[in-house]
Length: 425
Image: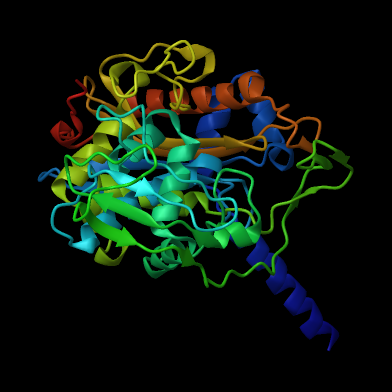
Protein backbone atom coordinates (compact mmCIF):
# COMPACT_ATOMS: atom_id res chain seq x y z
CA UNK A 1 0.00 0.00 0.00
CA UNK A 2 2.86 2.34 0.90
CA UNK A 3 4.60 1.54 -2.40
CA UNK A 4 1.43 2.38 -4.36
CA UNK A 5 1.04 5.65 -2.48
CA UNK A 6 4.64 6.61 -3.25
CA UNK A 7 4.15 5.70 -6.90
CA UNK A 8 1.07 7.93 -7.13
CA UNK A 9 2.92 10.84 -5.51
CA UNK A 10 5.86 10.36 -7.88
CA UNK A 11 3.53 10.20 -10.86
CA UNK A 12 1.82 13.45 -9.82
CA UNK A 13 5.16 15.19 -9.33
CA UNK A 14 6.40 13.90 -12.67
CA UNK A 15 3.28 15.20 -14.39
CA UNK A 16 3.81 18.59 -12.76
CA UNK A 17 7.40 18.76 -13.97
CA UNK A 18 6.47 17.69 -17.48
CA UNK A 19 3.81 20.39 -17.74
CA UNK A 20 6.63 22.94 -17.92
CA UNK A 21 8.69 22.79 -21.11
CA UNK A 22 12.30 23.95 -21.30
CA UNK A 23 14.78 23.25 -24.09
CA UNK A 24 18.46 23.39 -23.06
CA UNK A 25 19.34 25.02 -26.38
CA UNK A 26 17.26 28.17 -25.73
CA UNK A 27 18.27 28.32 -22.07
CA UNK A 28 21.97 28.07 -22.95
CA UNK A 29 21.71 30.55 -25.82
CA UNK A 30 20.23 33.22 -23.58
CA UNK A 31 22.55 32.59 -20.64
CA UNK A 32 25.64 32.66 -22.87
CA UNK A 33 24.83 36.12 -24.20
CA UNK A 34 22.92 37.60 -21.26
CA UNK A 35 23.78 40.89 -19.62
CA UNK A 36 24.03 40.87 -15.81
CA UNK A 37 20.43 42.15 -15.61
CA UNK A 38 19.07 39.42 -17.88
CA UNK A 39 21.11 36.80 -16.08
CA UNK A 40 19.56 37.91 -12.77
CA UNK A 41 16.07 37.52 -14.26
CA UNK A 42 16.87 34.06 -15.62
CA UNK A 43 18.14 33.00 -12.19
CA UNK A 44 14.86 33.94 -10.47
CA UNK A 45 12.03 32.27 -12.41
CA UNK A 46 9.68 32.18 -9.42
CA UNK A 47 9.89 35.96 -9.05
CA UNK A 48 9.66 36.93 -12.72
CA UNK A 49 7.42 34.07 -13.92
CA UNK A 50 8.90 34.39 -17.42
CA UNK A 51 8.01 32.12 -20.33
CA UNK A 52 9.53 32.19 -23.82
CA UNK A 53 8.90 30.44 -27.14
CA UNK A 54 11.41 30.88 -29.98
CA UNK A 55 10.35 29.39 -33.31
CA UNK A 56 12.76 28.91 -36.17
CA UNK A 57 11.28 29.01 -39.66
CA UNK A 58 13.03 27.07 -42.40
CA UNK A 59 11.85 27.28 -45.99
CA UNK A 60 12.08 24.45 -48.48
CA UNK A 61 12.80 24.75 -52.20
CA UNK A 62 9.16 25.75 -52.81
CA UNK A 63 9.29 28.46 -50.10
CA UNK A 64 7.04 26.46 -47.80
CA UNK A 65 7.72 27.26 -44.13
CA UNK A 66 8.66 24.58 -41.63
CA UNK A 67 8.58 25.44 -37.93
CA UNK A 68 10.70 24.26 -35.02
CA UNK A 69 10.02 25.72 -31.57
CA UNK A 70 12.23 25.96 -28.50
CA UNK A 71 10.74 26.61 -25.07
CA UNK A 72 11.83 28.18 -21.79
CA UNK A 73 9.56 27.59 -18.78
CA UNK A 74 6.46 27.33 -20.97
CA UNK A 75 3.60 26.01 -18.89
CA UNK A 76 -0.12 26.33 -19.75
CA UNK A 77 -0.96 25.91 -16.06
CA UNK A 78 1.18 28.82 -14.85
CA UNK A 79 -1.18 31.77 -15.00
CA UNK A 80 -0.25 35.13 -16.44
CA UNK A 81 -2.64 37.95 -17.12
CA UNK A 82 -2.88 38.11 -20.94
CA UNK A 83 -4.08 41.73 -20.90
CA UNK A 84 -4.41 43.12 -24.43
CA UNK A 85 -3.14 40.02 -26.21
CA UNK A 86 -6.73 38.71 -26.10
CA UNK A 87 -7.59 41.47 -28.56
CA UNK A 88 -5.79 39.49 -31.27
CA UNK A 89 -8.12 36.45 -31.42
CA UNK A 90 -11.15 38.73 -31.10
CA UNK A 91 -9.96 40.68 -34.15
CA UNK A 92 -9.63 37.46 -36.14
CA UNK A 93 -13.01 36.20 -34.94
CA UNK A 94 -14.77 39.49 -35.72
CA UNK A 95 -13.62 39.35 -39.35
CA UNK A 96 -14.63 35.70 -39.57
CA UNK A 97 -18.06 36.36 -38.10
CA UNK A 98 -18.65 39.21 -40.56
CA UNK A 99 -17.77 36.88 -43.44
CA UNK A 100 -20.10 34.20 -42.10
CA UNK A 101 -23.04 36.61 -41.93
CA UNK A 102 -23.25 36.50 -45.74
CA UNK A 103 -25.44 39.58 -45.72
CA UNK A 104 -25.29 41.56 -48.98
CA UNK A 105 -24.09 45.12 -48.73
CA UNK A 106 -22.06 44.89 -45.51
CA UNK A 107 -18.44 44.10 -44.73
CA UNK A 108 -15.77 45.09 -42.22
CA UNK A 109 -15.89 48.70 -43.47
CA UNK A 110 -19.66 49.11 -43.04
CA UNK A 111 -20.93 51.58 -40.39
CA UNK A 112 -21.47 49.69 -37.13
CA UNK A 113 -23.84 51.15 -34.51
CA UNK A 114 -23.70 49.77 -30.99
CA UNK A 115 -26.86 50.25 -28.94
CA UNK A 116 -27.41 49.56 -25.23
CA UNK A 117 -29.86 47.23 -23.50
CA UNK A 118 -28.39 46.24 -20.12
CA UNK A 119 -26.73 47.70 -17.05
CA UNK A 120 -23.25 49.07 -17.73
CA UNK A 121 -23.66 49.23 -21.50
CA UNK A 122 -23.35 52.38 -23.55
CA UNK A 123 -24.23 53.24 -27.12
CA UNK A 124 -21.72 54.20 -29.82
CA UNK A 125 -22.93 55.94 -32.98
CA UNK A 126 -19.84 57.89 -34.07
CA UNK A 127 -16.07 57.53 -34.23
CA UNK A 128 -14.15 60.76 -34.70
CA UNK A 129 -10.96 58.79 -35.45
CA UNK A 130 -12.41 57.39 -38.70
CA UNK A 131 -12.15 59.21 -42.01
CA UNK A 132 -15.96 59.20 -42.35
CA UNK A 133 -16.62 59.75 -38.64
CA UNK A 134 -18.37 56.39 -38.26
CA UNK A 135 -17.44 53.26 -36.33
CA UNK A 136 -16.72 50.00 -38.16
CA UNK A 137 -15.08 46.66 -37.49
CA UNK A 138 -12.15 47.69 -39.68
CA UNK A 139 -11.59 50.90 -37.73
CA UNK A 140 -11.75 49.10 -34.39
CA UNK A 141 -9.30 46.39 -35.48
CA UNK A 142 -6.97 49.00 -36.94
CA UNK A 143 -6.77 50.80 -33.58
CA UNK A 144 -6.29 47.55 -31.69
CA UNK A 145 -3.10 46.72 -33.56
CA UNK A 146 -1.78 50.28 -33.87
CA UNK A 147 -2.04 51.31 -30.20
CA UNK A 148 -3.94 48.50 -28.40
CA UNK A 149 -7.12 50.55 -28.02
CA UNK A 150 -9.31 49.25 -25.16
CA UNK A 151 -12.60 50.73 -26.33
CA UNK A 152 -12.15 49.06 -29.71
CA UNK A 153 -11.72 45.72 -27.95
CA UNK A 154 -14.92 46.26 -25.98
CA UNK A 155 -16.87 46.83 -29.20
CA UNK A 156 -15.53 43.60 -30.73
CA UNK A 157 -16.39 41.72 -27.52
CA UNK A 158 -19.96 43.00 -27.84
CA UNK A 159 -20.22 42.12 -31.53
CA UNK A 160 -19.01 38.58 -30.89
CA UNK A 161 -20.71 37.90 -27.56
CA UNK A 162 -19.05 36.09 -24.66
CA UNK A 163 -20.55 32.70 -25.45
CA UNK A 164 -19.86 32.68 -29.19
CA UNK A 165 -16.28 33.88 -28.97
CA UNK A 166 -15.26 31.31 -26.36
CA UNK A 167 -17.10 28.37 -27.87
CA UNK A 168 -15.69 29.12 -31.31
CA UNK A 169 -12.12 29.23 -29.99
CA UNK A 170 -12.66 26.01 -28.01
CA UNK A 171 -14.06 24.41 -31.16
CA UNK A 172 -10.85 25.39 -32.98
CA UNK A 173 -8.80 23.55 -30.37
CA UNK A 174 -7.64 26.43 -28.18
CA UNK A 175 -8.52 24.75 -24.93
CA UNK A 176 -6.66 27.08 -22.55
CA UNK A 177 -8.58 30.19 -23.61
CA UNK A 178 -11.09 31.93 -21.37
CA UNK A 179 -12.26 35.45 -22.30
CA UNK A 180 -14.87 36.63 -19.83
CA UNK A 181 -14.68 40.41 -19.60
CA UNK A 182 -14.48 43.78 -21.28
CA UNK A 183 -11.71 46.24 -20.41
CA UNK A 184 -13.92 48.50 -18.34
CA UNK A 185 -15.20 47.97 -14.78
CA UNK A 186 -18.21 45.65 -14.99
CA UNK A 187 -19.75 42.92 -12.93
CA UNK A 188 -19.59 39.29 -14.00
CA UNK A 189 -23.28 39.44 -14.90
CA UNK A 190 -22.83 42.60 -16.98
CA UNK A 191 -20.01 40.96 -18.94
CA UNK A 192 -22.33 38.06 -19.82
CA UNK A 193 -24.66 40.51 -21.56
CA UNK A 194 -23.71 42.10 -24.86
CA UNK A 195 -25.27 44.96 -26.78
CA UNK A 196 -27.65 45.07 -29.73
CA UNK A 197 -25.72 46.06 -32.88
CA UNK A 198 -26.77 47.42 -36.27
CA UNK A 199 -24.79 47.50 -39.51
CA UNK A 200 -25.79 50.14 -42.04
CA UNK A 201 -25.61 50.20 -45.77
CA UNK A 202 -22.60 52.04 -47.12
CA UNK A 203 -23.00 55.78 -47.43
CA UNK A 204 -25.63 56.02 -44.69
CA UNK A 205 -24.96 58.42 -41.80
CA UNK A 206 -27.00 58.08 -38.59
CA UNK A 207 -28.25 61.01 -36.55
CA UNK A 208 -26.33 61.83 -33.34
CA UNK A 209 -28.93 59.78 -31.47
CA UNK A 210 -28.46 56.76 -33.71
CA UNK A 211 -31.64 57.15 -35.78
CA UNK A 212 -31.39 55.74 -39.30
CA UNK A 213 -33.77 56.18 -42.28
CA UNK A 214 -36.07 53.25 -42.97
CA UNK A 215 -34.52 50.52 -45.08
CA UNK A 216 -30.92 51.58 -44.44
CA UNK A 217 -30.13 48.99 -41.76
CA UNK A 218 -28.58 46.00 -43.51
CA UNK A 219 -28.26 43.75 -40.48
CA UNK A 220 -29.43 43.81 -36.87
CA UNK A 221 -27.92 41.67 -34.14
CA UNK A 222 -30.03 41.44 -30.98
CA UNK A 223 -28.72 41.74 -27.44
CA UNK A 224 -27.34 38.47 -26.10
CA UNK A 225 -26.78 36.75 -22.78
CA UNK A 226 -23.95 34.25 -22.50
CA UNK A 227 -24.70 30.74 -21.27
CA UNK A 228 -21.11 29.58 -21.71
CA UNK A 229 -19.80 27.27 -19.01
CA UNK A 230 -16.37 28.12 -17.60
CA UNK A 231 -14.36 25.90 -15.30
CA UNK A 232 -13.28 28.10 -12.39
CA UNK A 233 -12.29 25.18 -10.16
CA UNK A 234 -8.58 26.00 -10.35
CA UNK A 235 -8.06 29.08 -8.19
CA UNK A 236 -5.41 31.64 -9.12
CA UNK A 237 -4.03 34.12 -6.58
CA UNK A 238 -1.05 36.40 -7.28
CA UNK A 239 0.89 38.89 -5.19
CA UNK A 240 0.90 39.78 -1.52
CA UNK A 241 -1.73 42.53 -1.57
CA UNK A 242 -3.87 44.53 -3.97
CA UNK A 243 -5.92 47.68 -4.36
CA UNK A 244 -9.65 47.18 -4.80
CA UNK A 245 -11.98 49.27 -6.98
CA UNK A 246 -12.10 51.94 -4.28
CA UNK A 247 -8.27 52.10 -4.15
CA UNK A 248 -8.31 50.56 -0.68
CA UNK A 249 -5.33 48.37 0.16
CA UNK A 250 -6.39 44.75 0.72
CA UNK A 251 -3.68 42.69 2.42
CA UNK A 252 -4.38 39.49 0.52
CA UNK A 253 -3.28 38.26 -2.94
CA UNK A 254 -5.36 39.31 -5.94
CA UNK A 255 -7.82 36.73 -7.24
CA UNK A 256 -7.47 36.06 -10.99
CA UNK A 257 -9.60 32.91 -10.98
CA UNK A 258 -12.32 34.45 -13.15
CA UNK A 259 -10.14 36.76 -15.24
CA UNK A 260 -9.28 36.33 -18.92
CA UNK A 261 -6.85 33.49 -19.54
CA UNK A 262 -4.85 32.17 -22.49
CA UNK A 263 -1.66 30.12 -22.72
CA UNK A 264 1.42 31.45 -24.48
CA UNK A 265 1.42 28.47 -26.84
CA UNK A 266 -2.17 29.16 -27.87
CA UNK A 267 -1.35 32.80 -28.47
CA UNK A 268 1.53 31.95 -30.78
CA UNK A 269 -0.56 29.29 -32.51
CA UNK A 270 -3.28 31.88 -33.17
CA UNK A 271 -0.77 34.27 -34.71
CA UNK A 272 0.77 31.53 -36.84
CA UNK A 273 -2.66 30.45 -38.07
CA UNK A 274 -3.23 33.88 -39.62
CA UNK A 275 0.30 34.60 -40.87
CA UNK A 276 0.78 31.06 -42.22
CA UNK A 277 -2.70 29.54 -42.54
CA UNK A 278 -1.42 26.75 -44.75
CA UNK A 279 0.84 25.58 -41.89
CA UNK A 280 -2.00 24.64 -39.51
CA UNK A 281 -4.74 22.06 -39.83
CA UNK A 282 -7.98 23.37 -41.41
CA UNK A 283 -9.81 23.24 -38.08
CA UNK A 284 -7.46 25.90 -36.68
CA UNK A 285 -7.88 28.34 -39.58
CA UNK A 286 -10.17 31.34 -39.42
CA UNK A 287 -12.55 31.87 -42.33
CA UNK A 288 -10.92 34.99 -43.74
CA UNK A 289 -10.74 36.54 -47.20
CA UNK A 290 -7.58 37.55 -49.05
CA UNK A 291 -8.42 41.17 -48.24
CA UNK A 292 -8.79 40.27 -44.54
CA UNK A 293 -5.30 38.77 -44.48
CA UNK A 294 -3.75 41.80 -46.19
CA UNK A 295 -5.63 44.13 -43.86
CA UNK A 296 -4.37 42.26 -40.77
CA UNK A 297 -0.78 42.07 -42.01
CA UNK A 298 -0.79 45.81 -42.69
CA UNK A 299 -2.05 46.89 -39.30
CA UNK A 300 -0.17 44.27 -37.28
CA UNK A 301 3.06 45.76 -38.64
CA UNK A 302 2.15 49.42 -39.19
CA UNK A 303 3.45 52.20 -36.93
CA UNK A 304 1.27 54.94 -35.39
CA UNK A 305 3.28 57.59 -37.28
CA UNK A 306 2.22 56.00 -40.60
CA UNK A 307 -1.52 56.26 -39.93
CA UNK A 308 -3.72 59.26 -40.79
CA UNK A 309 -7.06 58.05 -39.38
CA UNK A 310 -6.55 58.38 -36.51
CA UNK A 311 -3.54 60.67 -36.49
CA UNK A 312 -1.67 59.84 -33.29
CA UNK A 313 0.53 61.99 -31.11
CA UNK A 314 3.84 60.24 -31.77
CA UNK A 315 5.38 61.64 -28.61
CA UNK A 316 3.07 59.28 -26.75
CA UNK A 317 2.46 56.65 -29.43
CA UNK A 318 6.00 56.32 -30.79
CA UNK A 319 6.77 53.74 -33.48
CA UNK A 320 7.91 51.05 -31.04
CA UNK A 321 4.96 51.67 -28.68
CA UNK A 322 3.60 48.16 -29.27
CA UNK A 323 6.86 46.51 -30.38
CA UNK A 324 8.43 44.99 -27.25
CA UNK A 325 10.95 42.59 -28.75
CA UNK A 326 14.08 44.32 -30.11
CA UNK A 327 12.86 47.88 -29.73
CA UNK A 328 10.54 49.07 -26.94
CA UNK A 329 13.15 49.87 -24.29
CA UNK A 330 14.54 53.36 -24.78
CA UNK A 331 12.23 53.95 -27.76
CA UNK A 332 14.87 52.55 -30.08
CA UNK A 333 14.45 53.61 -33.75
CA UNK A 334 13.31 50.75 -35.95
CA UNK A 335 15.36 50.07 -39.11
CA UNK A 336 13.25 50.45 -42.26
CA UNK A 337 14.00 46.89 -43.38
CA UNK A 338 12.54 45.28 -40.24
CA UNK A 339 8.84 44.77 -39.55
CA UNK A 340 7.22 43.14 -36.53
CA UNK A 341 3.78 41.52 -36.90
CA UNK A 342 2.58 41.18 -33.34
CA UNK A 343 0.21 41.86 -30.46
CA UNK A 344 1.50 42.81 -27.00
CA UNK A 345 -0.25 43.25 -23.68
CA UNK A 346 0.54 44.87 -20.36
CA UNK A 347 -1.42 44.82 -17.11
CA UNK A 348 -1.03 43.98 -13.39
CA UNK A 349 2.76 43.78 -13.76
CA UNK A 350 2.60 41.26 -16.60
CA UNK A 351 4.12 42.10 -19.97
CA UNK A 352 3.42 39.82 -22.94
CA UNK A 353 4.32 39.94 -26.62
CA UNK A 354 3.53 37.48 -29.41
CA UNK A 355 5.50 38.33 -32.54
CA UNK A 356 6.65 37.37 -36.01
CA UNK A 357 9.80 39.34 -36.89
CA UNK A 358 10.96 39.90 -40.46
CA UNK A 359 14.22 41.38 -41.74
CA UNK A 360 13.73 41.94 -45.47
CA UNK A 361 17.32 43.09 -46.02
CA UNK A 362 18.99 40.00 -44.58
CA UNK A 363 16.13 37.60 -45.40
CA UNK A 364 15.57 36.60 -41.79
CA UNK A 365 12.27 35.55 -40.19
CA UNK A 366 11.34 33.99 -36.87
CA UNK A 367 8.57 33.91 -34.28
CA UNK A 368 9.14 34.92 -30.67
CA UNK A 369 6.65 34.99 -27.82
CA UNK A 370 7.22 35.82 -24.19
CA UNK A 371 5.83 36.94 -20.86
CA UNK A 372 7.42 38.40 -17.73
CA UNK A 373 6.05 39.57 -14.38
CA UNK A 374 7.66 42.67 -12.88
CA UNK A 375 6.11 43.66 -9.56
CA UNK A 376 8.78 44.04 -6.91
CA UNK A 377 6.51 45.17 -4.05
CA UNK A 378 3.96 42.39 -4.63
CA UNK A 379 1.04 44.84 -4.63
CA UNK A 380 -1.30 44.53 -7.63
CA UNK A 381 -3.52 47.15 -9.23
CA UNK A 382 -1.42 50.04 -7.88
CA UNK A 383 0.20 50.88 -11.27
CA UNK A 384 3.64 50.58 -9.67
CA UNK A 385 5.40 48.04 -11.84
CA UNK A 386 8.95 47.84 -13.20
CA UNK A 387 7.98 47.95 -16.87
CA UNK A 388 10.58 50.52 -17.89
CA UNK A 389 13.37 49.34 -15.59
CA UNK A 390 13.07 45.59 -16.06
CA UNK A 391 10.24 44.45 -18.34
CA UNK A 392 10.95 46.29 -21.58
CA UNK A 393 14.74 45.76 -21.35
CA UNK A 394 14.04 42.02 -20.94
CA UNK A 395 12.11 41.90 -24.23
CA UNK A 396 14.62 44.08 -26.04
CA UNK A 397 17.62 41.98 -24.98
CA UNK A 398 15.99 38.60 -25.55
CA UNK A 399 14.83 39.79 -28.96
CA UNK A 400 18.31 40.96 -29.90
CA UNK A 401 19.99 37.74 -28.76
CA UNK A 402 17.63 35.70 -30.93
CA UNK A 403 17.90 38.15 -33.83
CA UNK A 404 21.72 38.03 -33.79
CA UNK A 405 21.57 34.24 -33.72
CA UNK A 406 19.16 34.27 -36.67
CA UNK A 407 21.45 36.55 -38.68
CA UNK A 408 24.26 33.99 -38.35
CA UNK A 409 22.15 30.84 -38.61
CA UNK A 410 22.80 28.95 -41.88
CA UNK A 411 19.84 28.38 -44.18
CA UNK A 412 19.59 25.98 -47.08
CA UNK A 413 16.98 28.18 -48.73
CA UNK A 414 16.45 31.87 -48.08
CA UNK A 415 12.80 32.89 -47.71
CA UNK A 416 10.82 34.83 -50.27
CA UNK A 417 9.15 37.36 -47.97
CA UNK A 418 7.19 39.34 -50.55
CA UNK A 419 3.92 38.19 -48.98
CA UNK A 420 4.69 40.38 -45.98
CA UNK A 421 5.78 43.51 -47.84
CA UNK A 422 2.95 45.95 -47.17
CA UNK A 423 2.06 49.40 -48.44
CA UNK A 424 1.66 51.69 -45.43
CA UNK A 425 0.58 54.88 -47.19
